[in-house]
Length: 352
Image (cartoon, rainbow, N blue to C red; front, side, top):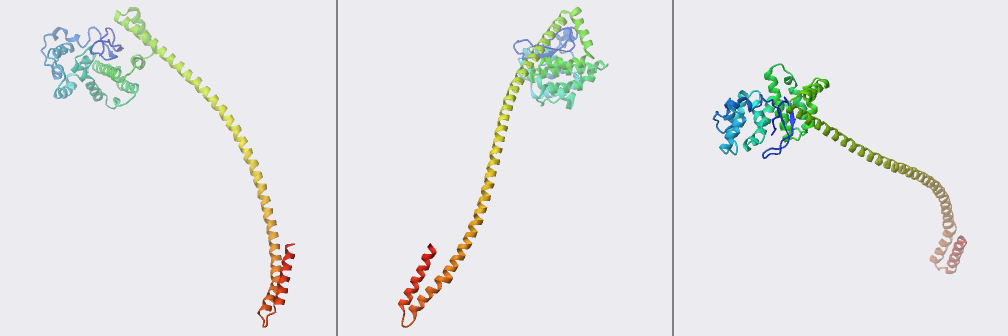
């Protein structure tokens, strides 16, 4: 968890790579106000049970004394009943969230504390902030903005208790967001500036005072913030370069797409012209076919009339006479033969 840095009211620091530490955290303690220092004179004399109820129930218990008791008793985890009892005890015994923050602010906490404190921090934040704290939101930056809006009044309050409570809740939120939701340090610093300072001039005066007349810890923090600013600028430049490359690539793709589009338009115009020409030819063929059908119909009508005359007026009587000549008594085959020959002669004339 976070390493305490003298000379800062609220700030974000890099966590040391020690056994039991995680990643980045948030810390802020003045030399005379740290969660461990307030009870240094009597902490060694306090006899604590190795439980959360023992820590929150004993007013003189300090985080270091509590950690010492846990290690001495080789506590691996806190019992469920102990966790529930501590949750009920905290609103009255720790209304300003100072003691919970004291546990979270220490470097290399015992395993049972590290396993418990993150869930406890979420519960306390939800209890104090209500709908302003949504741990299910996937956007850590959005969660932080919502928390800042909710705590802005308390952070600027004239009442010491309200301001202290708001600061500790903010510390809990920052530590949890950085550790568990990968909120970036520069996002914290960027969003805290307008909350902690009325304008840039006020922020500049504080920074100038820290550099010119600040204690070594304040000067170290100022240098760290400058390094963070350089990191932010470099990240912005890298992002700008990346976006420029993306823009150039998109411009090239757009030009290529425009060329393809122009070709497709040209092909479309050629296709439209071809279709128009084919439609004209089809119309002409339709007209020709209609004329031919009309002509064929006229010829067919004439042919039918001629065939009707041939069969009905010329062949019919000859064949009828031939049949009659063969059916009379006595038959007259000679007459029938002449009529058949006459019919054949008529058919030959029709062929010519």
